[in-house]
Length: 189
Image (cartoon, rainbow, N blue to C red; front, side, top):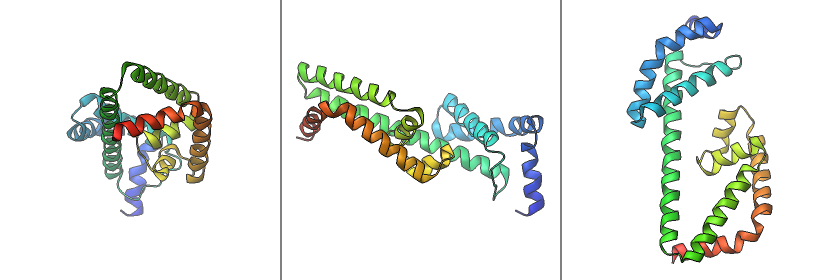
């Protein structure tokens, strides 16, 4: 792409009116494309809207090395793949929990639910940025570089925030560690 094409492509980011026209031009086709990946029209619309919002928010620092259309399709494609990966992680986690629960006594299941609640409370108590980074890493299985790119942070900041999150969680959940290890070992036997 030459400089003139790039400059023409970036005109849509110059003001809100131009961006609105750009959005309306590409939105439906991108939703259709996202729906072919996700097979869920609501998720598809959410992903495309998120891509457009991110594009607008990063318009001042964005450097395109391809056409705006190609950039949009690549961004939507990546967002859809991240969603599919996240859904798979949640499904695998649910299956593991169900498997564990099927071998558990009622008392153990009660303790497991208590532990799960404590974990959720501990994660929710993390500082905002720390919690978001932790969730993206552990539940969406994103690499630190991917998280840094999505959030506009350095990889070092992501590493530091993960270290902080793990330290806080270890401290808050230290009383439950022996029980958690017992549950894990039991699920593998």
